[in-house]
Length: 113
Length: 113
Image (cartoon, rainbow over all chains, first blue to last red; front, side):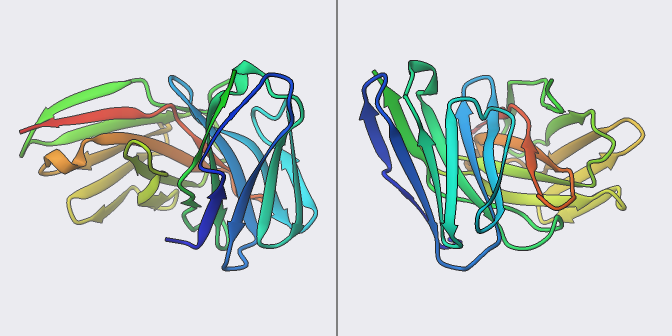
């Protein structure tokens, strides 16, 4: 357990509504990531952060935005949820430089109906 | 464009035998490679890694081999156990300031008793 908490763990929302997922870490790690996992696609990077207010896009960033106003929190927002965003979302943190592994949260299962 | 590829969606192995999971990558800038294991309804957990300056890394029953010229890595599990049944993801790091981890699509390993 790398001190990562994702909330909520499950959510059902309607198409067109905004949704925010939260990733909270307790160990002040610099690097944080949001991934989505879908059958046949593995884990795809949505957005990542390399410091407070420092964020950038990943492979599948369309329809998503992020914010990191504090080291410990990395928020993922679906501006207007669509059915294609039904997925399992994982937050990850990476303690130091490139020679270390990333630790993942337990995931958030999001269903857009 | 999939930079990290796992061409076998699934693999079935008898208990006690060797499991070999394969991964190919296209980006020659990748310099650190990792394997993750994932059980249903849980986040991925780190298994083993290898730096591009090495061609082999071993940890107990798990060994990762890297062939840089072929841009190929493999994970060997010997002997395989039923508890090893899970989805295995290969990941690669592109270094730099952002430490992004790019994942493959995963291989579902089933170890038969």
